[in-house]
Length: 366
Length: 176
Image (tube, rainbow over all chains, first blue to last red; front, side):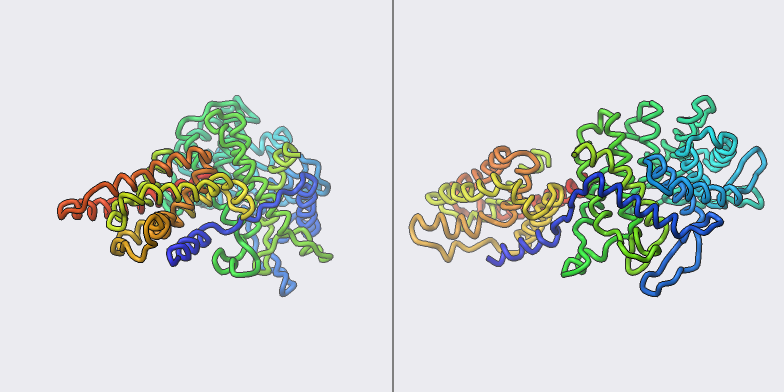
C-alpha cells in the first residue's frame, strides 16, 4: 500500500491537470482586439508605447526598450492585416517614431539602435505592412543586418553605431532568429536581391551550431527561428534535414512549455508546485512559435504528422491567453496581461501575435 | 513511446528476478493472469481517464516514466520481498503475488500511458509478455548458484527500469 501511495504521489507531482479550454475564434479575436486597444489607448502622441505599468501602485514604471517597440509594431501590423480596429493608426505613429530614430551608416545601411534585433523586427513589421511602401528603407536595414552576420552565420547582438563595428562576442538568444526571419522576409518580398543567402547562412548556424556555441542548456525556445523556418519554406524552398530536425525540436520544446504552463493555477497548492503564471509575453511566444510550426507542418511533409498536436497546443495557448487577460474600466489595465501586478507592452505584443496565429486553427475546428 | 521502450520498461518494472523468492510455481501463473485482468480496464479506459483528469498523453508518459524510475530505484536499494504474509492455498496468487508484488503503480501507469500512445491491445500484449516472465521465473529451482544469478539479474533489471523510466520521461519532454 505504501508503494501505491508513493507511486501515486510521484505521478501526481509530474502530471498535474492541464487547464486547456479552447476559445472560439470570436473570443480569441476579441481578446486580440482588446489588447490592441490597450496598446493604442496608452500610446504617447509621439508614437512611443506605454512600456511598463504597475497595476497595484497605479503608476507607469520608467524605462523603455526599442527592440520591444519594434516587436509591438509587428504585432500591430499583423493585427491590421487581420482587420482589427485601431491597429493601423497605432502602427503608423509607432513606425514614425522608430524611423525618426534610425542611425544611417556607411554603405547605405540603417540601424534602429545598437541592438540588431530592433532593426530585424522593424524589417519584419514593415514587410508585414507591405514591403513596397518602404522598399529603400528595408534594403538599408537589410544591409545592416547582413553586415551583422558573421562568417559562421552567427548574428552580432550589439553594434557600436559610433565606430560602425560589431561589439565583439555579443550574442542574443533571440536576435539570431529575428535577423534570420527579417532577411527571409526580405527575400520573400524582393526575391531578386539575394537576401536568401544570409538568411540561409544564419539558418545553418541556428539549426546546427547555435545552441552549442552560445547556450547549451536550457535550449533556446525560439519562436523567431520558427517564424523564419516557416518563411523560408513559404518562399518556397525545401528545408534541409537539419532545419526540419530543429523545427521538430522546437515543436517539442514549445509543446512541453505549453503543457507545463497549462498546469499552473493562480490559487491552491499547485501555485507552489508549478509557480505563478508565466508572463503574457512568454505564453504569447509559445503561441507564436506553435503557429509558425503549424503553418510549416502544412507544407513540410516530414512534419505533417505532428500538425494536429501543434494545433492542439495552439488552442491551449489561445485558451490560456483569453482566460488570463485583464478586463477593467481602467484603460491601463483593460486588455493587458499582468504578472505579479505588472504588465509590459511586449506582453500584449506577443499575445496579440499568438491569438492571431491561432485564428486559422480555431476557425478550422469550428 | 516506442515498442522497444515499452517492452523494456514493462519487463524491468515487473522484474520477476527480484520477486523470485516469493514466487510459487503453482500460483504464479494465476497471479500474473489476475494482474493482467486488472490492467485491462486501465488500458481500455485510459483515454477517457486522462481526459477526465485533464492530462495530456506526453505528460502521462512523463509521469509513468518517473514512477518506473522510482520503482527501479526502490528495487535496487531494498531487499527482495518476503513470501510472507500470504493467503493460504490458491489465495497466494492474490496475496502476495498479484498484490502487492505485481500490481504496482509503475505497471498501472505503463498500462495507461502505453494505451494512449500505442493502443490498448498493444499495451496489453506488451504487459502480458512482461507478466509471462513471472511464471517462467517461478519454474527456476532455488540453488546457491541460481540465487546469485537471480540477485544479479534483479539488480540489472532494476537498473534497466531506471534507464527505461528516464527514457519515457525524455520521450514525454520532447513530445509536443
